[in-house]
Length: 116
Length: 418
Ligand code: FES
Ligand SMILES: [Fe+2]
Image (cartoon, rainbow over all chains, first blue to last red; front, top):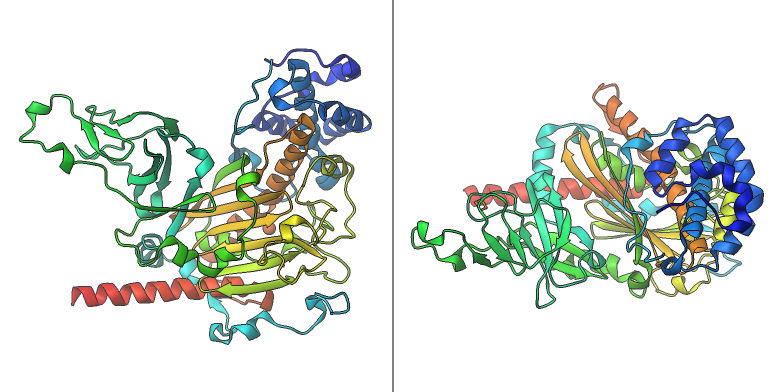
């Protein structure tokens, strides 16, 4: 279950919880549904916090990840999802690209983490 | 390569000089749009060669099965791991009245049970139970097992061959091209795959061609990869090394070690190999297999092996990816592409893999658009040929192999009919 809360140290990112999405399909659909300025706002809110986010996530093994840590991971995944839109394309979709909705991702994990 | 030796892209070396038998003529477009050609490829190529079906990690336990549809050969194959631990493959067809046996893509079961009338088979392919058995006429269950398909495993890749009597063993077929990868840690690097599937509206050869040259990188991938695989010295992404091994090819891909990471890339690279990162070192453990980066170039990024007809395997440090392009019809190709990593030990590593997964996808989307746009123009008849340059050697070689196999197949079936 994805809770509505992040680990305490990252409470300041709580207003971005709509980006804490567990699958690539959901993250990608949300990227495509946003304007580039929405994506830039999210990207620039996350970027200065990402080093701390990764320091925190680097201490957690998938198999004993608390739900709050998974929620933070899913938020970080959305940062990865929107990064090329902001850093490479200057628009939500890949420039002159194939429709991402036709490009179907497989599972997030080969073996689901057995976390709490 | 010693540091004093000139990088190959700065010399006048031409790959085609090593393969005078291939010629340098333009190659015709007709085989990319011809229905008759497609029927010939179906019969004389896809029905004859070894095709990858899955990784062994997909069927680790006795009772595991995985279904691989092979539309081009008008069949579906079920790959199983029997109680004895052996990997087998069968046509996924019930011996009663021909229903598709396993509808699910994968699973674990003691018996594969046909949903139509309940005939039940063990994972070794034997018919074990027939409901209302006495209503048949002297039914001998031992004569009604599943139809086996040739199967073998190389480095954890399960291959199948739909020819009832394959001309070559898998090892013979993959040959020296496979040997170049001896020692690459496939088992360790395969625990966490990320797969994408799609159907490109394009001929399988056109899709393959788009991936067996990298000369398009500075143009088509300018958005996603502005400086990862090009440099001032190598502005057209020439290969570091390339070689043909029978129908297969292997090439060393250039990476720009002056590449500057984007902010997200830098964050991700700190926790794992990101494929497009600045850590191309020619000195990692991965380069130890003799055939991987064989010239020991410090500019090496990837070793790409293209197995005929359409299986790509590209390895680098800590990660590798595969592409398989299977035709559905003359104009449509099933694309399955997978990047492989070790299972992440921390959530930060999982993030790093996610970044690569996203970038890999977005780069692929640039290719996907191109192959469909190209295919849409081929039938115009405006151009009759592709004009290939030296760096497009693999496209020419693969075209020639298609021609050769069809000619050989037609000759054999012709003599059979005589
Ligand atoms: S077709 Fe399978 S049981 Fe009848
Ligand atoms: Fe490409």
